Image (cartoon, rainbow, N blue to C red):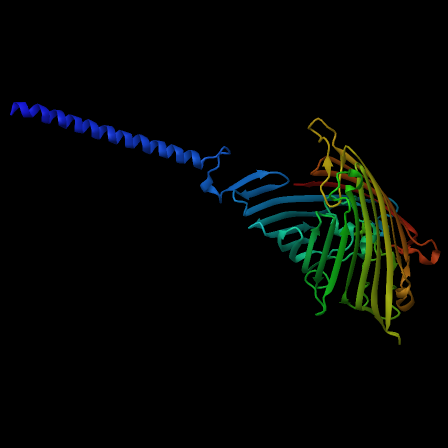
Length: 450
């Protein structure tokens, strides 16, 4: 028995050792497998492949969010624009009040999902309260075809459609902007073809401002733009833009309401009279009731620090008056040209300014110097039928300087001289019963946006 005990014990020890070795080998292989899986899941950027829906946040031209898989991205921004207006020629007795105002402030909310749908919302805040300035949903999977529905600007006039209020050349637009339609509710298709050489915009709108729709007829608007140097390597032609645009629709405005404001943009918000004025009692009623047509063309050219802009606009509206021939037509034409030069920066139409070297980064920021001429002419329809007085021709001579310590902060100064018709019979009335043939204004703007 003792002879059998030792072999059995030896075999038992060998079996236990084998089992222990096998178990330790299994454990080691398991650890290696876990380590390999962890390495596979953890790429060099530190993000896990299984975390494809996680959001990444960073600050760059607003607070930005983006999912790892690219199916969601968002941006949150804001801006504040303040003005100080000084009327150099007229004072409180004439109805012109100097002072500070908040031109506009707003919060920008942008989102894009599934790399195909965009949502944009811009609530703005001013002295008149809060309102939705822009708000739309857009399908934009392809650069060649995008579809937008909501509240936005009609595609007319490079000055008002292409340029954002945040970086338009001067604190106030030119006289030509009086022709431009306001933002409206509608639908639009647009896109770029040939790598941006050709752009198109075509939309259908209610026809008045948001919240008002006086008839079932809709306005249509179209804009075509050419950028022949879009794919060129030469800066000499790369930023040349030529556009044509047109709107047409049936409108019906309240009795005795002019087709658009007869007041220079730099004088908005003042209590003074318009340059073409209704008498205390109209000779007869009139109404904008019928087809309204706008047509225009524009040119924008940028080469390094140099900018040239020119635009022409024609406006026609059907009127009903109390005369026997109760259908007549009001016509107006307007033009604008501006020249600008940058020191330490540059800009292309519709884009944020580029500052070569920002203040506090060892540089001095960028300065833009602008000169502008604009004019508007009204025919004598209102004068003949309803006794309107004042000027039918206005000329603007404006000069401005913009200083950008960085691309997101702007300090501007603008001087504008408005010249009315020189005949004594066409002088513009003021609030105190006086008359004048010209006005001037200085506007200082301070702005921050991100």
